[in-house]
Amino acid sequence: MGRDKITGMRNRKTAYLFSSIIFIVVIFSRCFHGSTAGNNDPRGPLYAGSQSCTNCHQPVFNSYIHNNHFKTSAKPDPRSLKLLTVAAKNPFYFLDSTHITVEEKNNTLFQTLSLTAHSEKFDIAFGAAKKAQTYGYWKDAKLYQLPLTWFTDGNAWANSPGFPASHARFDRVITTRCFECHASYVKRDIEESGPLAVSEKLDPNSIIYGIDCERCHGPALEHVRFQQDNPTVKTAKFITRIASLTRQQQLDLCGICHSGNDRETSRSLFEFTPGDTLTHFYFPSFGETTHEPDVHGQQLQLLRLSKCFAGSQMTCSTCHETHNARQPTATYVARCFSCHENSSHAVAVMQENEQRKRDFNLSSTTCIDCHMPLLPSKMITLNNGSGSKNLSYFLRTHKIAVYK
Image (cartoon, rainbow, N blue to C red; front, side):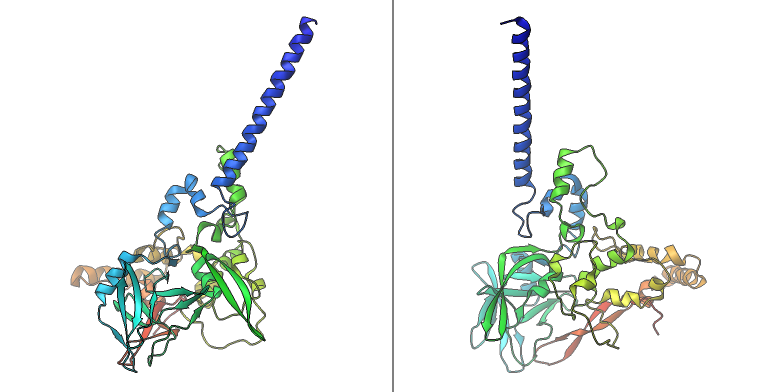
């Protein structure tokens, strides 16, 4: 056999071996990506899970975990609940003379009704506790709301919104409609509960608590895999940048949770991805209501009534930094002045406020205090228990206007 032929065979073997190594590396790389970036996400094979975002976006992630959106649902924190129990240790009395106590059993907190000794565990918390936090317990794949809710402003327990002051309730079902604004996913099955009735069965192990990265930016598995394979590419691929959306698409994205919970959905809002049209997820409305939108859950409708909104291209992100915790009031006032810096009224008020601080050491009244005041919700009312006194639940209106 000639030397050239032997050399050729050796080169072909080397090339074959090299190709095989490359093939194995690619296969193992894909397997590695599959195990570290998604495939186990209950939403489906296109999702990577928020932890995958931390490899490249750790500072943003570290900031976002302190945001109220991220904390809008969670497994209850026993230590925080114990602090609430100490802060409001007295029983909560109803008009029928029964009362609820919040008590600890085996390092777990329960709400327990007197006389019947009906007791249910804190299994899930809804709300970031900035204003309030309500709780639920699981029974037979259904989630029920506990009778008492914690209200931060009053530093006290009160009957859960919509519950009667006369007696305790443990039978109010929490449906997926609640999860669609307070979580990123929960799996549900529909079963027959009667001849003409159906009910939901929820899987507590499928819950993705809070509003996570992919709820706003869309499924990210393809993006994660591409960026892992191409670390030098700095332009994000296969992911939605909010700034790339049109104004209406941005409003629709925020409107999933902030444009009303009183409309009937034709599809699960968990199916909404950035760029979709929100109206496609609701049944048509054949009757227009004349009442003003409520300050709870209808911020987008209120914003649309504002002259600031109608006369500009503003979106929710104009004022809100979604990845950060709530900003100081001065930050929001600065956003007002970005459009109204030449307003003689705004300048005069700012000068007056500075004068009050110097002369009387008084806190100033800001643009927001006057033009976006705290107003009582018509949908949420509280009750202080045995006194049967209705208490208002105040939230900041997003209708920017002149109030007298």
